[in-house]
Image (spheres, rainbow, N blue to C red):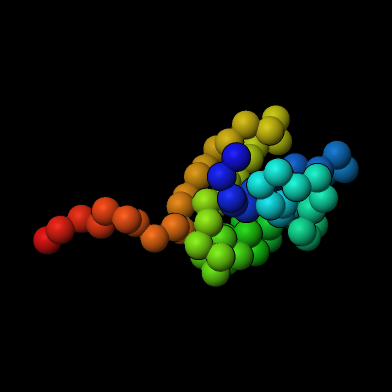
Length: 74
C-alpha cells in the first residue's frame, strides 16, 4: 500500500487520522471535518496520498500531494 493518510470512522462515532498500514490512529477527532482538516494538512506536509473514508469504510475522496514526476508543459 502506498504511503498516505486516511480519515477513518471509529466504532463510537469519532473519526481518526491513520497512516497507511498502521493499526493505531495518529489522532482521533469528534467530527469528520476536524479529522479531514488535520489529515489533509499532514498529507501536504509529508507529500503523500490523502484518503477520506465513508462510515462504511469505502473511500469517498482521494487527493495526492506527491510531487508530479511528469508535470504538464505549458
